[in-house]
Length: 111
Length: 243
Image (tube, rainbow over all chains, first blue to last red; front, side, top):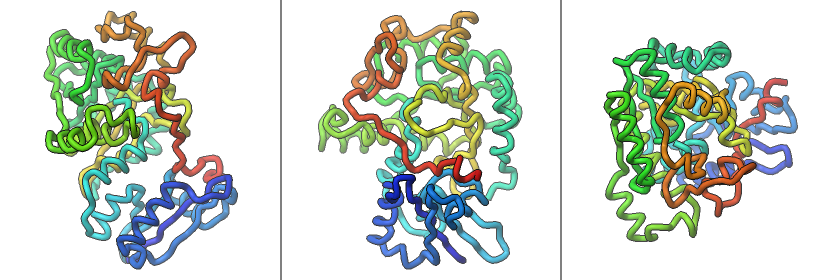
């Protein structure tokens, strides 16, 4: 299995806030050692490796994870806690999961 | 992975050209286990449309956060009786609400922001409900949040709420409609509506977090007005991706 993490650099040159938060969480949890490659999706450069990967898989969110297993179709994960549970087989806290869902989908609070 | 996963990207292109009624009809034909999310506001049009398309197949749920206006509870009941349908009213986990209130009080959202409260009172029960269905229908519209870069598709693969190794399809039939179109439908079809709308409320949520808006104000200004506008920043600019 090969796992690629794609982080976004925004148009102003800074790292996107969520990418920063996710990376921080992963470092604290020792999960970065399970990542084989980290690519940058630089919004200022459509040909940056991360932007090309996003275009190839029609991903519209960052960060995202590309999971490649031999003989299987590649999987894209845009929800960190699901990636942690389903790919890394590690536990997550429900309150963190719910907050991530709301942060990623700010229009849900209109429901 | 579910083998019957829809290609929602292609379908979104096709369905975006359709009317909300056609989108709902497609959704009801495509999925047996599908539910409408009803907030007790103008998304009642979804129920009206679905009842006219296939009255026997309308499954509706509402999130009762425990902090709704009395008018909203009365309206949910009115809709239940008017259409003769069951409405599954779902509640937050008592233990989670109790912990938050005990530690932070009943109005923590004014001191921090609304996200923790919304996570516990809305997102938690929403997730529990959505684990029981294969597809859901919402009244979300693009014009509700013009400040974000979010573009709400008509149909989407809902990865956030899907069961593990399964798929969940989300329909937003009103995505391309404006508030004016929704109200035109309500008036033309004599659809019942929440009494709060007659008191100046455009967007209706929980009582402490909703206020009437004045002329020229966007409906979002009636919600969480004490917070700064939060710009969503984790989308990858489609313009760049498509180049």
